Length: 336
Image 1 (cartoon, helix red, strand yellow):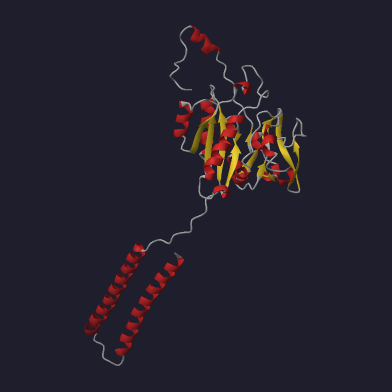
Image 2: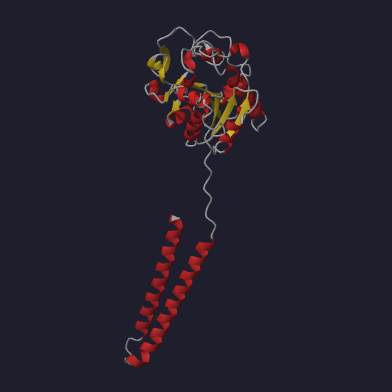
């Protein structure tokens, strides 16, 4: 653009110079002759008028030329690595609210593919319709949890690991789908396990996008503490700040790490062990992928909390149940 502007200015300058030069030549030719203003003004005016007309014509040609020129194509910027987010979900009163909140967070993240896996023998209309209207790139899967691994009513949430089959199903689909794409095992990308009841800062997704093997960061409101986090010294993770069994291989929450897609594809056997002891689910997946020395600390050397292990309170339905007993309950056709 700057070059074209310089050329345009140069052309205008040359034309004005020519007009001035012709005027000077004409004036010199008249030196020593009697001045008859009436006789000489007319041809001079005609010359100047003709030159101005020529200048105007050339300017119009330049404008038309600029308008018809094809703009120079800027080199396309390479797309950032895709973040593949695997979210296990199950039917409950707050499911739609949780998934809606999560979807609206993900809408602000570039190059994100959401893999939603229902704990169900089939895809449900609620989740199908929510995903179709989300505006996100997504994959909808389902995989029921085995009966002997399901939490029963009244069981504490820590008694059995939840979402194991669903996360493993997401990994299975991801490996099969990526290997069918051009580039196979060499594709850039990041894999993150995002539960539907957590709260995520948008910054955490940009932090994880540069993951080479396994990146880590703090998680707030988890394990009965304000936060758990990797402790970093000289740019390396040396231990973990946690209140329960810090001797575990990787004592951190599911929301506190991301894995490069290349690493996931290069290790097809890596998965979550549903039989792992309580608190060892994350370690069962990471142990075969990375060592502590290879962990990549993010979030300003693990000093900032950018994800929170929040949980929506289970709604109390006493009045609803009382109205149902009277035949006055809420219309079941209204999806909540």
